[in-house]
Amino acid sequence: MIVAGSEIVGVTRVRPSTLLGKGTVERIGDQVRADHIVVAVVDATLTPGQQRNLERAWSCKVIDRTGLILEIFGARARTREGTLQVELAALSYQRSRLVRSWTHLERQRGGFGFMGGPGETQIEADRRMIGDRITRLKKDLAEVRRTRGLHRKSRRRVPYPVIALVGYTNAGKSTLFNTLTSAQVASKDRLFATLDPTMREMKLPSGRAAILSDTVGFVSDLPHELVDAFRATLEEVTEADILIHVRDIVHPDTEAQKDDVLEVLDDLSAGEQSNRPLVEVLNKADRLDDEGRAALGNRSQRSNNPIMLLSAMTGEGCDDLRRTLDDALSAQRREVSLRLPWADGKTLSWLYKKGEVISRTDGEDSVELTVRLDPSDADRLEQRRTGD
Ligand SMILES: Nc1nc2c(ncn2[C@@H]2O[C@H](COP(=O)(O)OP(=O)(O)OP(=O)(O)O)[C@@H](O)[C@H]2O)c(=O)[nH]1
Ligand SMILES: [Mg+2]
Image (cartoon, rainbow, N blue to C red; front, side, top):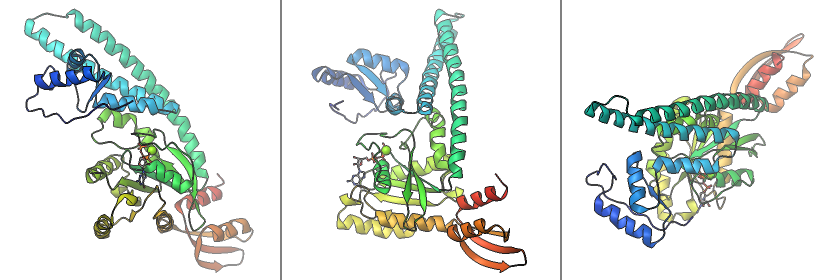
């Protein structure tokens, strides 16, 4: 697809039938015909009527913001869950538009005093059909999620902490994912190159392993029904031990993007009040000059969370990030006190290998220990001792 042109159009007074003013509609229509444009995207919410009228005026397909996001999600969905989520979101979108035009009809009807016009029954039928399909989809989704929950539990038994990459679309999450894991995952200069989370093992400097999770990019003003539909995809994020917030530091809207991401994380209760360590990565450092670097250096001292300037592309600063992740995981360690029978030499040596033994009292037939352990190892110890 080639972008033939884009422009910001001022709307001083909304024209209900087309949103845009008459002159603008005509001018864009001329351009559409001259350049043989097949799709026009309007970065706003169009009513079904506005969409139809613009399509008629321009003789090309017209989609609005939500429509475009749904198209992108649809094209990138790979897993069954992703596909179901997109379809559910698309149907909810359609239904809300039916509701809107239905209300509109109802109002007309009231005005003219007619009861039950022909439009009403058709829309009622459409609504019912969409409603039935939505119910089916929700059931399928619940089933897919249930089995995914099982998979996640078995992964949890693999005692690795999970680190999730989050951030605005095009920030460089997949590039960093590749750099940190040296894995090959589609990384393209396109929006939403990743829809479903991708997980891979990475080694940290201390020798401990972690699972890195790449996620779909955030986007500002995501319609609420889309956020709901994608909750399961983002669920991976709420379960992570550490979040890495990847930011495109050379993007003109980088500050607004940051706010958007933090807001969504708060919604998912994965934000600051969740006590989960959040490492902020200022990516694309290779595109900053000395002055830009200095400005960022000053600002980063005013934050509680670690802020790392790096380039996912050149690898600059990535070793620092690895060390920071190691430290953050160590800081999360839990103190566990326990008494072990001498016979359990296996657990004793496992504790020495995995944890940091703070105190030890040797008794007649058992040993008392206080050990600092990664949360995932502490869970594993519990499972081991309860015979799970
Ligand atoms: N100059 C520069 N470009 C980078 C860097 N990291 C990523 N990019 C580029 O930024 C674009 C987007 O990178 P991705 O890794 O696909 O971004 P993403 O965050 O995964 O995007 P979504 O999957 O859409 O959410 C690509 O063209 C990358 O080559 C960097 O450190 N420096
Ligand atoms: Mg990506």
